[in-house]
Image (cartoon, rainbow, N blue to C red; front, side, top):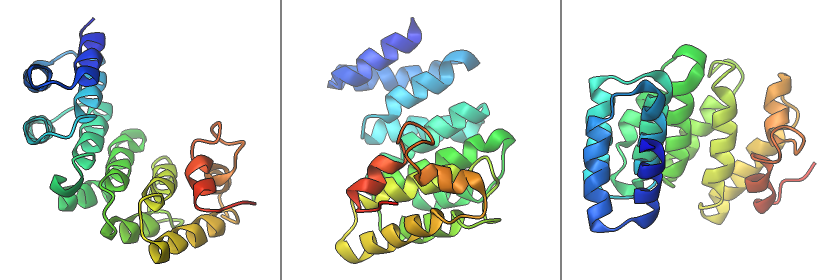
Length: 193
């Protein structure tokens, strides 16, 4: 019920809904609900929500809830804590959840500086196997919002990943991998096999 309530508040997006979400982010203690609640709140760009997400992240969260908080912080665009997202993108965690959340958060910032980090993290050996697909997906998402020259760098990197030595790297760009999740942004950049 709390998860659906948080999603409904985020969809509503009014001032009262933001205030309620800030309270819920700070109060939610159920590990089974934390990820969904933080993800719903993080869908809104608001400095109060960003502060609540940051406070919860600093206090310590389960892996998947941390990932949701980092993604929500990235969605704050210009107000996103870029250095913290970069720091978490270099960390390792169980299953790569936290690192994946940071990589998706970097893409959500829409900052051109994220291109360098995501490109580096997409290289073989730079990121653990479980988190590396998030860097590939992040490149595709970020590329949709970059200027032409930077978008070309993204396209070239995604084409390079089609020849990735690890099968999972290629599959992230391949339409058969995850229902085209990573390929949709690649196609908008003009990447085709």
